[in-house]
Length: 488
Ligand code: FB9
Image (tube, rainbow, N blue to C red):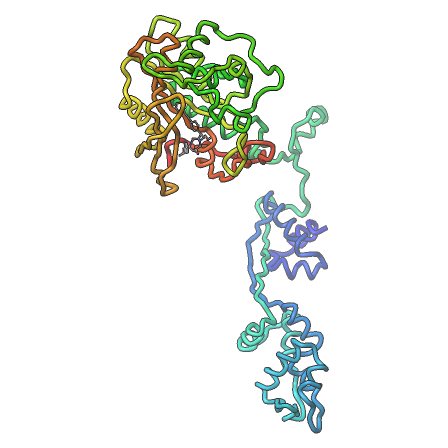
């Protein structure tokens, strides 16, 4: 239809100067013409040039006055030819907006005398505004000043009309030749491949988006942390057990049984299996003793340590429970320095808020060697966090049941323009290490942080539910860039 009209018209004519006029002359919708022009231009049947035309169209108010007359004329006609009418009377006869604008315009045109009583000052008026609006509606030109006054009264607005001028293209033909997009067996058998015109290959065409799996942002950041640990000579600890016994999660860490973190307000205890099956009895005895009466220079906590408390199964509250198991295993061997790290889920029965869920991923690093000092801890923290782009660190004394001294770690975050708490650290207590069997001079320095906090900051996510859990919008997973740690 539109295609034949255009190709047919160009058979005789040099060009179609204006697709808009062409459409109305052929009783076609300009939008159909435009679609065909774009397609024919694509196949170079024609050569189309953009043409723009500024035109004026009536606003809804403009259309109203073009139909019902301008407010000032409506007001004038509502005033009796002779005598006067009270303003209130007049107001009742007209719509509020018509009365308001009518008063100011008729007043300005000195058509009426606006007092308590309103009377005509002239016999007859022309509705120039209405005439002008109708002419604009019919696409006729009107004078600049008239345009400005109608524009000022928001009765007309500018509209850009976009069309095309069209000429024959290099592949012009009065009828579009069916281009083959594929060479088929039939073409070969029929031999009509000789006549057929084949569509150009568009080597820039993008293939269908390949649907593939996408790594969750947390796993991308986790991998970056793992790379840093391995580069620093750390070995990953096996964290594939969310369920842990209170013994390894708390007691072996010299955390007393009445410590608040050990009650169900903070910790998820298991109903079934509620208790652990086996613990290394001789070591348990040593842990019991150090809790009850100390030793190794410590006076212990001097309370009755209960085996059944240590037997309780729970969801681990920190991956430090894994460090405890690994250090106990390490102490069984002839001593050799070791660097260990873990990154995995931990569970805390805490009140849930914007940055806290009942589970998060803890990142932990530890260095076990002889005569390590707090300086060594600060040194390894400097090294570790500088690789994350966090160079300016500050340390604040803190308390953990299993480390003494302990320090909270802070870094100045250029992007957030503030000091951010980026983790916790400390030197494991001798009451933890010596019952394991480590030599006197062996020290273990360790630190921990979360995976969620750096990931939220890197990806600019302020609510943890948008990052983790059933509310995560999968497209975030699909289209999230790789955010390089350490690159602001
Ligand atoms: O991750 C934390 N903050 C953080 C870390 C990195 C980061 O990077 C940004 C790109 C720049 C930003 C922020 N924190 C630890 C600090 C706070 O968020 C804190 O409010 C919340 N903490 C969690 C525990 O919440 C109850 C983060 C989590 C945490 C805290 C302590 C440890 C582990 C995780 C630990 C430990 C430890 C100590 C001594 C020995 C062994 C382990």
